[in-house]
Length: 332
Length: 277
Image 1 (cartoon, rainbow over the protein chains, first blue to last red):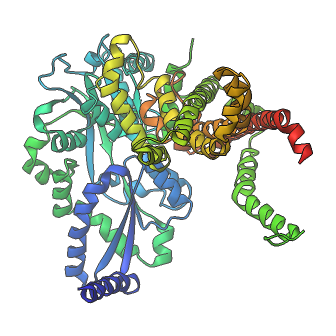
Image 2 (spheres, chains in turn cyan, red):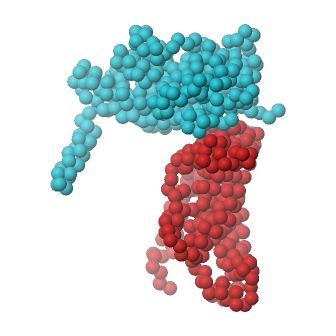
Image 3 (cartoon, helix red, strand yellow):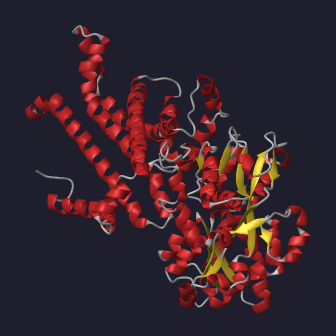
């Protein structure tokens, strides 16, 4: 009994040790909630690559808050590719010369293989009748969202509300700031992250509406059951893009450029796009999107580039110290 | 005199190298990094409205939590040492849980318990008491993580106090209060201060548990470590080190003051015995 266990362990060790020197490996440094997506995607790519080239490839994943991840890469974490949830994080690496300055044009669709958008998650039956952004700023409505300054999820919510107000007749930056200030006044707390906001809303039953990614709504359904909440699509929301890039310095050093490019390219393949749809992220491929149409109702969106001139402008204007978020909280 | 450990020179050398590598080097790196700012910039960051509010929250909540722990921790330690009761070992090991539990788990659990819909929050709500997502929530989280520091510091000291001392005081006509105040407390006080200091210092730096229960509203329930994280989110490492330096300085000053108090207390009560030894 114990001998066979020992043999088994030795075998496992051998299996574990062999690929370490016999196999090419890629490290994908990614944001926190992409875990499920890449858990499903990596085997698809490994199979594809083996069939195409005969080479079996090992893929390691690292997940954490995106700006933390990017700092780690800048400090020397040897990532072959980065897959992030906000362009400002990849821009930071481009500024350090680790990623090509024109990374966004190296792949189709602004280098973002899939998208998502911010939607409202309300209590079952929508008791407060919340249909669109103006309903969220009404007195007596409690809005739950993650910290708008410190989290990617919160920043998208903030910009979505801002862009909505800006797009209304007579909309101006001043009016938008006031609109967002009223929205934030309805927030009883700022959750520390996307999942914390979900827990606060679903489990602790705090608030009337949770502003979050469309993809998060599906995860909530899996976790808490479909009957617990409704999803409301506002008349206008933001297009959340998830840029990917090859880390030039690392792939040159490791000689993995070919594999890294193929790994990211394959995200746009039918299999890659289907995987996105199955993880409730909107695929770029029109056919795949059509196939999953009832999962993704049409919604009018604007991108950060269109309304804010890109993250490189939006970030300092709104989320740096002294930006609009801080202005809202300056005591008069 | 023969010593068990190698000579003074060698062991002092080890001590200094060890402390330098572990403590001084990273801290001087911190100060060095923040010196990229000129004094005016440093001052602006250190005394911003949000920063000042966060010092009040961080240091205020930490002091309050440490004070609560000093009071109740003393009772817990006393009971655990002096009174045998069934399940004492079990209760004793419970005290260590806040050490072992990942702080994020503690924070999420406390937030769920103290939210308006939680087990405890539901009872407090009719009284008009909101704990989760208010500064009070921060105190609760910091009290939780600080408890073992006080209890574990006091236990060995209380064990050393012989019950005969109390009995002697009683036979000499001291009231219970007098026995506690004049006989027991002087012996315990330095350890109590140490426990208080440890709990306090731990609370100042705490991030993981607080962040889930604080609510994180600017000017109301933002702790300084959150502002530091916020700076890091903007890739403003230097601004973050400036705030860190301020925390370091205030903490160091407070710790020094407590150490001074401890030294004074020890000398006041033991001065005569020390010299006679």
